[in-house]
Amino acid sequence: MQATTIDEVISFLDQIIQETKEKPSTMGYFAALYHKVTCKVKEGIANDFFDDNPRMERLDVIFANRYLQAYSEFKSGAKPTESWQIAFEKADSYWLLVLQHLLLGMNAHINLDLGIAAAEVMKGKDINDLEDDFNKINVILSELVNDVQKELSLIWTFLAKIIKVTEKFDMILIDFSMKLARDGAWKYAKLLASSPETDWSQLIQERDAKVVKKANIVINPGFLIRFLFKIIRIEETGNIRSRIEILEKD
Image 1: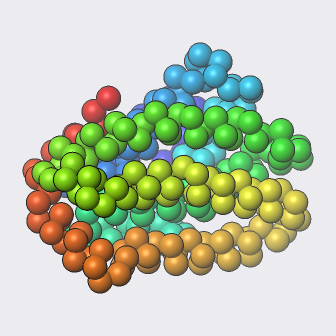
Image 2: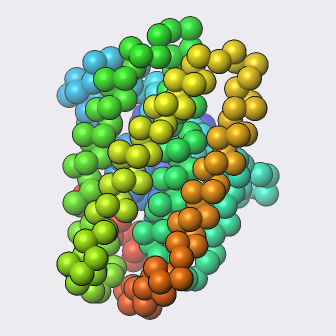
């Protein structure tokens, strides 16, 4: 399962979404969100939103292929990177929220895969030439944040009350999916780009280990938050299939 164009990426994501609806799996949550992001990137490319649109498609494909490879490896019994391993293993965890499943996927894909993909697409070139387009991805994601919040409010029956009381929902989603994660991914891309390719394997392993630590924070955020999350989990409506369908909505 490896794509060569952004259309193939979307097609493969469609397959994963369909698989995870037919045989219900929470792995479909991230796939549904990622499908939406990829369609937005495709739209941006078509509208010349990026400085170098062909390069952005190459980046998108390289980036997506890391997820597609990890998914295929896990499904076949092989072992993907530790970051994806823990995200996929937790797909069977009853007590994790939809939000936590999304964050585990974003953690692996943004904090590990994105920097690698950026360095890959700029091999032999100045990585700094990519920075403007890299940052434009944040613009696309920011447009999706409100959509995701609305979709999750359909799953969490008292999400609106939680937002009013804690005022932390946006901080969790925005910080993790955009600002903090992508800033870190860019720094990591620059580190790889400035290092001999022979060192990449070791650098990726080291980064993977750090990203797993972040995953563990998502899974075990502390007693009080865990207690709150359990209450929210009980209040989540629908089933896995219906939640995937909610996340698919434009």
